[in-house]
Length: 111
Length: 492
Image 1 (cartoon, rainbow over the protein chains, first blue to last red):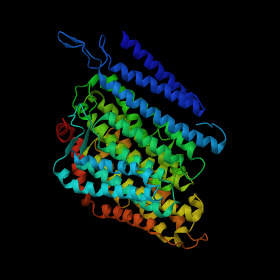
Image 2 (image 1 turned 180 degrees about the vertical axis):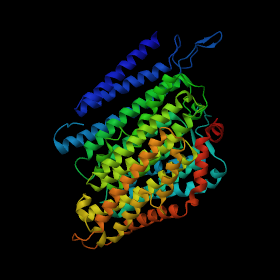
Image 3 (image 1 turned 90 degrees about the horizontal axis):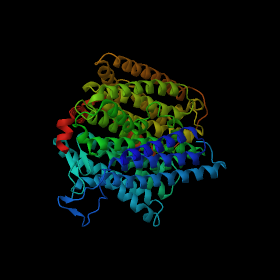
Image 4 (image 1 turned 135 degrees about the horizontal axis):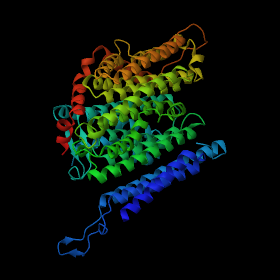
């Protein structure tokens, strides 16, 4: 159930992001929509690695009789971290270019 | 330590040194970047004989695939990497004499752009590919914004928004694929049990989107004309040749290796190839028609490049020996001829003071070297006999017609595109050599002459003596058409 609701949230954010990118004309709003899309995608990636009843992928003393407690898949979480960093870089670059555009044309402009 | 990784690290190391080096000398960025690309060529050539005998899987950080990232060194990938470094070196050589001096940051971004292109060709991990793609998008959008006119930032934003949107959708596709396959290594996808058709098709389309944009396939190419026209000539040449070549390699890897008949995508392999065929055919017709009615020289080249990439995509979609041979020859020919055409176009635009080719009437009669180089690049691209594009077009049409059915339409699109290409390039070259216009003779600097002569020699040599690249072509085709023996078994 948790994975399902997580995925529904992710797809909703993705759709909102795509709608914003396709319909907005203002550059800043398009960049905001791209960030919403990115958040949705990151949620989807995180949802992929979730298993019901499992804990965070950190080695602690929580050892059961059969071994370690079940962990969620740590790989998607690492991917999300990388994706967040890349997204921040891209947004910073886009804002810098928007600023350059503003200084040249004295308007936020239309993309 | 895997010494082969150094091939990827040359531009990275140059990029790290540039911010410090420019404090000592303003020319440091140019010199260190050029040195790193030349080192990449030499290092690649040293490793080529060994790789020709047996492809190598280079494991990063001792994490054995499919758990870790790997780089795949084969004749196909290494040959393309040497080509990328070669074009990057020629571009910087052109840059040394033919543009105003720039700050070191430009070369840092350019090195980032080159390393991302090289990484995309070499990597065997799909998330790693996404990271290289994003690196390339960030670097190239910054380089477009640093263009020759005030529309640079706007063009750059158009490109960045489209590229970022498609890249994010690719990440969504990667997540869905990981949920089904449990790995990110492309070799695993190439021999995994078939996924459900609807799921496989959705994932494949999501993953292919940024690659289709990178090779400027319709309808994801609306950014191209403006971006190429706004960017500096040297970067337009790089963006057209290096970025598109890397994209072509990734498309071939996706369509033929990880979406083959025995892969996780086997249930939709034919549908994916059909999609690429249709989009490629439309791209040829739309790109060439746009080039025909275009007045600005650099935009003509941009639309012509769109048409060429459409032809390459059609060749890849047919997935036969001859069609693939044609597509690979055309990929090489496009990289060399387009670089030559952009260098010449940049030189002519600077000397004439206009970017409209109709206003350059008679310029070739005074500036005969640039006029001649442009003519050579044009005939190589169109596919005249004795030039590199000729063998590519012949093999491509032969190979695309072989499967019959709807593929005949693809072959027809290539033929029509070639005719349109012939018309507008003949028109431009004739205009350059017509009587008229009051042009002064110009002096030629080595930064223009040396790269142009090298590229001219390359397009003529591969046209006159195609056997020169036969071994590379055969190795590449076998690798792409037999992913189990020549790719997956080596990696896993």
